[in-house]
Image (cartoon, rainbow, N blue to C red):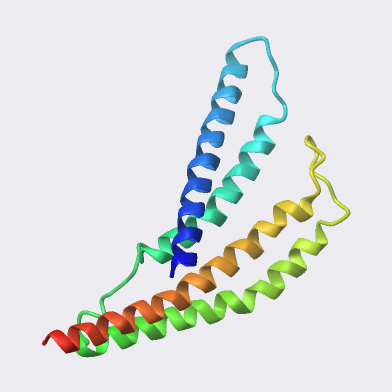
Amino acid sequence: MKLVKLLSNLLKALTVVIFSALIFVVLIQITGRYTSFSFVWTEEVSRFLFIFAIAVSAPLAMEKREYVRVDFLLEVIPDQIKKYVDAVIYLIIGCFSAFLIYYAYEFALLGQNQSSATLAVEMYYINLSMVILFVLLALYSFINIFAVLKNSQEEGVRQ
């Protein structure tokens, strides 16, 4: 679990750095509109930073179980079964994310010989953000399965 905590801390730091850079680039873009300076690269950099911000921050939301949920049906289910339903939901999300890793990599390979218009960055690296996203979502989904079931067992011991 130390490795997971280290990964989470790394993702938190990356999220702060990427969002800070995004804010800085957008401020440069806004400043360029009201001055005689023209910054053509800011639109592309802000788009790429936003893509990577999603790729590193979405798994953090999965780790903390902060995704928006419709729990109408969960309210009807008895408390003893809710944990198992949660575990199945995380299993489905994890399996679906793991399934999409291959297709995300295939998508990343499409960008190998293409470069972005302004920065001339190979699109493979930008598209690779989807692979990162799905790997991390699958990892944290499977971790959540164990966390949910462990909490279920600990609550059963306490009662």
